[in-house]
Length: 262
Image (cartoon, rainbow, N blue to C red; front, side, top):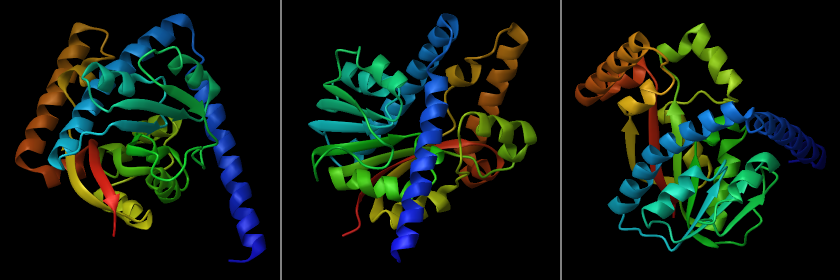
């Protein structure tokens, strides 16, 4: 690659990183009522994400003594892992100062640092486990970020929504994905490609249609809660008997534990 091409790549990455920082600063700078609502939402999501982390680590006999979450947000997932006595020394990195300030108030976490979205301020193999939970769909070059996390961590836990499906093609769903900063629309094959380009291989994996509480969280009336419960029952039922059909029809959450390819 020529010097000019390298320079252009670096400049584009810096611009993308700056846009992500502005997006997340806005996301964490809400009114007190909104902040409380979304803190409860992140705490609810953290319970399911922690289930995935512990289950996948258990399948490979891993019980890490040090864990780094890249894109840790307000620290909800790390705190849930701490509550369950899992993960050992817990550290986080975030791209926005607003989230770092919130996460640093959590005494369960050893450190939470600001980073540039591209480079981790840690040496090689500094942690036994790295976590990228709902991060790769937000970044323009997910394989590069995954490779950088793998440099600093012995194993990497990845979780993403699988949004390459019929339901997510609807205009309202596409608009919502854009509003929450999704720049990648992934399926299992695309995730596996990212992992391979990052120099890793999948050790174990799982899918989750999400629990009923998640589907009902934003329902504000009895009829809305009933509709959300019906949606959950349909998705969970289809996924239990026909996972491939479920992937084509609606969004699932996909998590996998990744190890160096060699």
